[in-house]
Length: 251
Length: 251
DNA sequence: GTAGGAAGCGGACCAAAGTCCGCTCAGCGG
DNA sequence: CCGCTGAGCGGACTTTGGTCCGCTTCCTAC
Image (tube, rainbow over all chains, first blue to last red; front, side):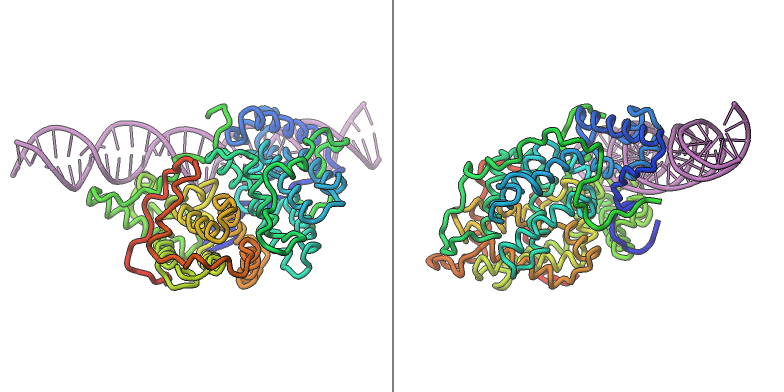
């Protein structure tokens, strides 16, 4: 154990190990089996009731293999989520207007947050498992979100500190907060969406500068909400498109 | 191990065990020794390089005693922080205008966030240790912050969903985000404060709301309202509030 | 002062994440 | 087809947060 303060990321920097084309056949098979077993166990028990030993046993491999392939529990959770993630990003980048390109920044940002909240409503516990510690900020999905929100903010107001404002707004979409509000406080999803809308309306003041403009009411913008992460066109366990600059392969 | 999904708080609900006047003499002595040892070790090594065994050994007690007194690692970290916390809350509730009562909501909210960021700049890793999992939202300090921000928002704009907006804004002051921005991205503290100011200026837009309502005085408003909103009571929040003559933010 | 009971103690114990290292075997060159 | 070799395997091991339970000690009632 070290004796100096350091950035508290437990171990490897969550490399989100990529499929690696030159992978040996048995290795690829094991990766697939681990992923399938993890997805099933997470789905039927809830992420926090599944140990890495459980996953290894279910996949019929040793625990060492699980960690060699995925690096950490958080990274395994990220890998399991990557399917949904890919579909969502597809909508953001190439989807129809409210979420995708074409709408005004404010509407896009609203739709974006609602889409994230929809995703959280389905997978919040898995997402929370994927975001432990500071892992969230190093993940590929977060990199995409950060970039997306930053660009929207900059487009709406070139004078603001868009990079940081994006991080602050994204904090409101964290899995821990969602889990708390939704499950411990039992707030309805619609109310969370509504408050996100309010926040966005303030962050990107509408075309009407005169104050006292009652922004939006529950129900007018929620048709944006991400047409259900359906079947993504092929894409087996691939890493998200448009990934951020990091991704350091593990030795 | 259970087989059903459940709210992912590892164990006890972070009771933040209070001093309990009827405590046995040896118990009180042990509590103090544990707290002192923990504060010292956390301070000199950084919170993530100190195990609970280290604390127990340094305090000269068994590990079981540490857990009986404080319940969890997160709760121990909260207890160590409670001194600073108490002083900060004192400033919020009875301090001078920018932070304390007397200023406009927007200025108070700005000053509040800057104060939190100052605290994080000193103790971020300890705070992060105190906030693991969903522990943050159940902690007494967070309860105070939530109430404070909610009241400020409601005062500034009685029509907004102040309770939830408060939670979303507070998310921007989380320790994990701070640690990431400040240490991994190496952003200067002043820039973080600046972006918080921008966020607040957007959240509470109007230059000055209809000044018909004079700013409230120390005692009344902060105790007045907000048991309501129809949410479950959310026990915690019992112990640490505002007492203690010491108002110095000095560690 | 003493006895009884319970509050408190502490270390053995457990679970689970993550590491290590000697063995195996898939893939390739001959 | 054979043998070589290193990528890959897997399970024993380590660490650490957290639990348990039999023994000790403090406090109160008498």
